[in-house]
Amino acid sequence: MKTLRTTAHVLGIALLSTVMSASGSHVAADAAIDPEVLAVREAAWRAFYDGDVKTLGDQLPEEFIGINMNDSPFTNRAKVLDASRAFRERGGRLVSLTFPDTQAQRYGDVVVLYGRFEVVFYSGGAERTMRGRLTEIFVRRDGKWLHPGWHLDLTGPPPSRP
Image 1: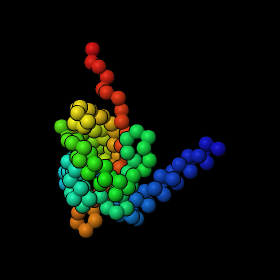
Image 2: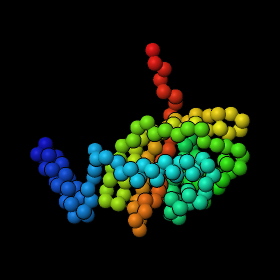
Image 3: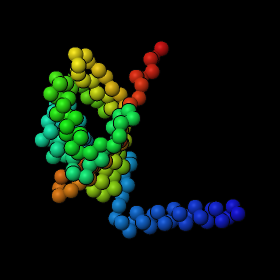
Image 4: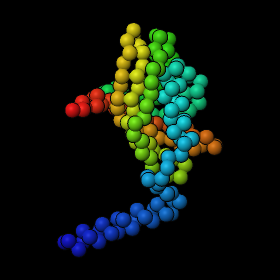
């Protein structure tokens, strides 16, 4: 039985290697993250909080799917653009934005970012801080990086230091 499991594991690894080689994909988890992808990510976040629906709309393709913070339902491009516009119209503004930890996997013209974010914004007469985790997808299409999806969740404040 142990030999059968070992054989199955070896075959599974071989199959995965063959598929990755045949598709021409290369996973580069430890390689430097393409600075252009990081710039597009930051521009998308800033465009959202600035109500810059032109810039944000240029980065989010029609087929965009997002999973937002908390327990909200899936979102699409139109809802994200509406939320951006509404945030700005209500007087919201970005105070600061940081990405303290980011790792990436690259599969040809697809980059998946995993990381953490901290955003401080002004809304409803008060400054608020949100911290969370992210998974963001970027696809290079016609020489340009697009942002077709994300999954964001909130985490609590960092633990106090003794």
